[in-house]
Length: 197
Image 1 (cartoon, rainbow, N blue to C red):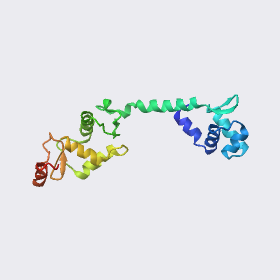
Image 2: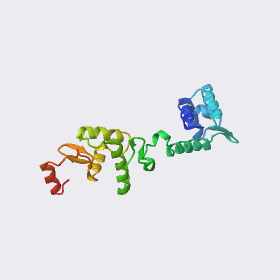
Image 3: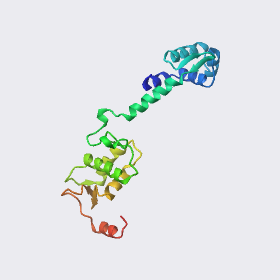
Image 4: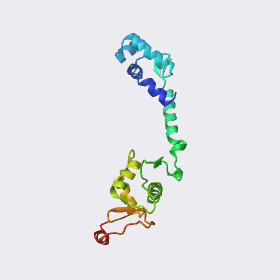
């Protein structure tokens, strides 16, 4: 049974209640109806659907949940998560899973060298050389990467600047090797000289 089929099957409240009643010990049709709080006919229809799908089986002592069907659906879902589809793997990001999926930053690695590798990829596909970006534009670009992950765009922006992958100065950001890289203003130079940046 596929995970989608399982979810579709259990999306019906009556079927979910009958399955729960059996999981909690109901073995007969009367026990299922009582345990699920359903009319006998409604419980029988739900039991038949669950049985046809292979979630309920007739055991020697009455009805039982077939947990192997649930485990196989869980394994199938886990396998689907581990193997990304072709469109999820962006060129240059093949070795960056589980941190990068498509154009989404899921998390940042704890190991600094691996984190720099992930951030380098992010910079290479997000920022153009010889272009200056104001802070709002940088936040928007990084926000699309961080929308559904565990890292916020402000943290990523800070890591990019601290690691030298983005240069900040005079209120704008740019790639360090570009001609558009901003120069620090006097206040930024002073803060850096004091060791506060």
